[in-house]
Amino acid sequence: MPINASRLIMTLLLLIICFQTAFLLAFPDHQTPLSKSDLIIIFSGSQTRIKAGFTLARDGYAPNLAISGYTLNHLVSTATKHQHPDDLVLLSNGKSRSTFEDAYNTWQIVQQHQLRSILLVTSTYHLPRAYLLTRLMLLGTGVDIQTYAVKEASLRSGGKGVILLRSKLFINEMVKFWGSLAEMTGSMISGRLVLDVPYVFQTSQFLKKKMLSSPILPS
Image (cartoon, rainbow, N blue to C red; front, top):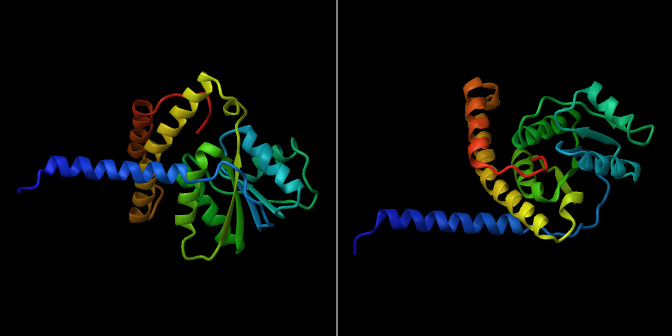
């Protein structure tokens, strides 16, 4: 019996989507116990994430803290708005326009300061993609990665509006999952951040507008 190419492709796509959905749903919805790390790294996107990161610093979970995409001046300005230990070391890093660049910045910080463990702070819905990209960037380094999932206030209730918002965020993450992998692959092949290329950045922004829904929460 000859193989139907279109049916084979559809079957493979369905399997990929099933595996991807399983991966995104695999992360526990409860916080696992934390141990001390060398660095608290916050993937920027909401003030809730930043507040949670500084709370972890006050609780003594790491002597160093960084917010992806924040310069030193921006870090200092942000730190003054949050109570934090006097001896907390703020580590600046490069610009960030995407979750992949968040992971790339994390890799740079780890290499520059010879860190052996990190505590990744981001929103619950964003965590699977953020963790995967960070894990891939730190592959082979032996760096231990812990995660802290921040529950956004807008997602804590169970009303119909919240269910719809969660659904939109989940679908967006499924789409962005492949965009992030493509960005990482392109950057590794070219040896530069692909979003530095003007037409790539413009194309990325265009595709986001066309393919993603527009929930209230940042991504």
